[in-house]
Image (tube, rainbow over all chains, first blue to last red; front, side, top):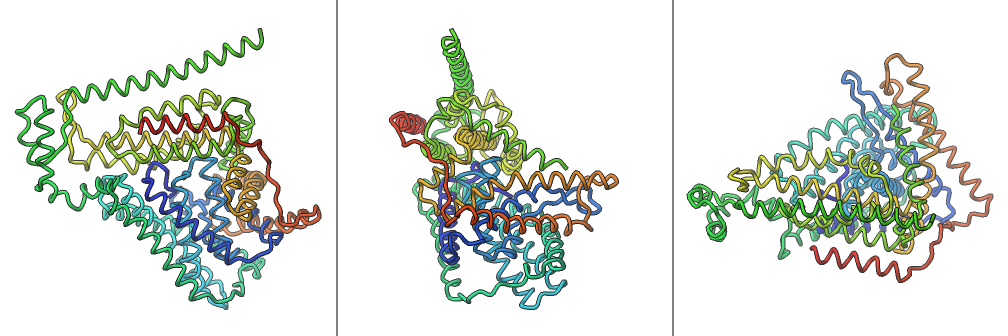
Length: 335
Length: 252
């Protein structure tokens, strides 16, 4: 579910990066731990564990396919939400860098989608409510399962919103949601089952690891904090609407919400003017005109093809020149 | 089951590549990071139909790839992970986009243009990222992040995770090999062993963290983590950044 750089616009990426920086700063501020605390190596090794455990193929019975551990919820259960969130943020940075899975600009989106909802929403509001202060096997199982499913549903919903606002898919938002949410329901269930199995194993082997940590109550702070996040998100996203160049959003909206309106308004005539100047075959004009469609004529098409070919040739030539000159320099050195 | 083994290999490969000694490798890590961020921002800022305008940005990738001698297979390995997602997101464009393109009397959906530009953006952004890591290495990136004033606490966690991934991956590789050798036609972990397989490793991991912490304290750890230091930014680095920024600006 990692967002890629190519799937977001700079504005959405930037807003989400700012939001993630805000949540991280909040997490660090709330920790108040010594810098030589035991938790630092614990976070390091736990992060490496989650990263590596994602490579384990857990066979899903009756399907032949395999599921993988997500990790956000397990980190929140074992380390608490703040440390869990920061550890997941570090894991995602390594994944983005080593595998290109995610990206630098989509980094904020990924940390938010996978870390915020699991650590700050699913863990305190669902897992902790179900498990309570007296954990039992049943409570732990349902707590993990439901929290994992809901956390991932929010994450998937976020992906839809971010992609839609970035205008990268022609799918309407409702169709995109219909596609994403059920898939992630399945993934969430498997992830929840894997997390629950690990937590139940630990509950039998080292129950003290699962016991809820004593934490000071910060209800008011949390409210302010969540309010800030929402404000940042809404502010960031709304600025897309206010922008002079609404990026891909306009494009996406044209496709879905306001297509019929646009086709009837004045904009249509602008396009028909452009078209009348560029069309090679005026006979073909009438049906296109009524539906307001862009037309790129033969000459523009040709120019485009030539442009693509030209750039490819330049790119290949650059490559050859660099290789040749390097060989030449190497020979000179040897000679 | 050899996901872990393949991942170890990918890590080693990038580590070895980042130790190279080319003109790109010698450039300051922070300069390379900033150039990459500018490049990524410019590339993704193009609108869906601006396929042709993206073409000059391919030259950056070719130049850096050739100068840094990063093999194309390293980039392709990463592209294989991300391209299915991008194709999945963009494949509906040709069918849903009502705008038409006339090419040689052929009426095509403009969605094809937005689809291919999305695909090209995916290729360019992933390649730029891999070229950055392949020429800078994780140590260089950590140092740049330190210069960008990221909190020490986060950087410590980041480098510790990176250092222990190799050890844990090897452990998972050994465990899963042992498991699959003892199970009949079971490549993955059966549901009855989900908890104990990962749980046992987790318990050992937590013990390992305790040992690591004791070892750190025994060696005088006082909360200060030392990162590899690099030379200061010089004239070449500034010229590198300015040249590419100018190039990006011209073609934007």
